[in-house]
Length: 212
Ligand SMILES: Cc1cc2nc3c(=O)[nH]c(=O)nc-3n(C[C@H](O)[C@H](O)[C@H](O)COP(=O)(O)OP(=O)(O)OC[C@H]3O[C@@H](n4cnc5c(N)ncnc54)[C@H](O)[C@@H]3O)c2cc1C
Image (cartoon, rainbow, N blue to C red; front, side, top):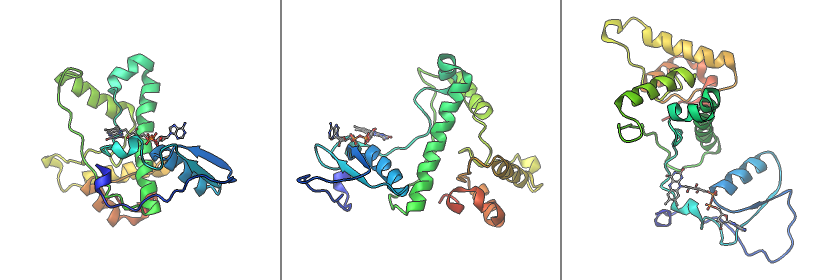
């Protein structure tokens, strides 16, 4: 699929002489590229080799869906490896996707990144009641604040216009600021608008800007 797109070729040449580098990365797919990018960003020199040439492996075949939800539902993973470990695995997956997004913004890579929401259908793995339990477990155990979940902020009609959404946004961003080890990736239109009206929280968001 990717060969159908016009993209700049990754410059590479046959290795016909000795080269010296701090690190040799074997494999020129997305994995090798990310390792090399992280190393060069830290000032290391890197040489990359591939027995087939750049982007000839799985990377060229991907459908490019980057999803933080891991294959095992949280409620299924917890009995296997323990509640804390399961929640940590899910949080780290979420964080790595947010970090990827942040790095793409920082490096200015134009890869037409776009947000999509996940839709879960009851099926063989999780029935309707299991799905409800899964949603509750994610809210409770993943410590996702309102600004960090993919769920839009919805305010019950009875509370509209009473500043409930703003209070939620302020509370969530304040928490991110206090904890200091995470950043928020605003995807909900309400939160995006709120942050634009409260630029003092820009520092708590990825790249100091909101997701488009
Ligand atoms: C059809 C398809 C669809 C996919 N869709 C998605 C998706 O939607 N979302 C998603 O997240 N993932 C998806 N994946 C998986 C994703 O593409 C891979 O996990 C990812 O590209 C792996 O990247 P990589 O750099 O580890 O491996 P690769 O891109 O395979 O790169 C490894 C490179 O190492 C080289 N190599 C291996 N051994 C040696 C050696 N001994 N010496 C020199 N070179 C060597 C190979 O030639 C290869 O170029 C999909 C995969 C396929 C096949």
